[in-house]
Image (cartoon, helix red, strand yellow):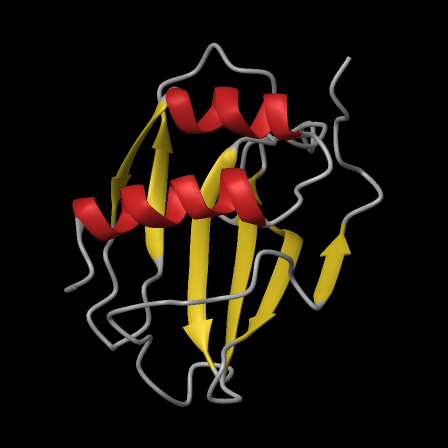
Length: 135
């Protein structure tokens, strides 16, 4: 499947159901208040997220809104049956809102397969200590 709105929706669902994000209600709210854009054409499945506001931030705001992204706040990595890996990295902007989702295969050295039969659980998770946790 070519990277675009349908593929982004697939990954949003995948992230919510399989990545073990530590504050799933907050992430679900962010995704429900978002539209997807900036679909990378390189073979990865990365995409931008435009948040319409009203959702609790994923991380505390930086205090000053800058044109730069807050940075990576979460990563989940999956090993496919053929030994390749899928890496999913979530970025937040300076307001603490979801800003970009990077989906790579083998550290973006190969295109993401059209069909992704990943195990139910990631083999590696890295989460920022600044995440706003569900209350």
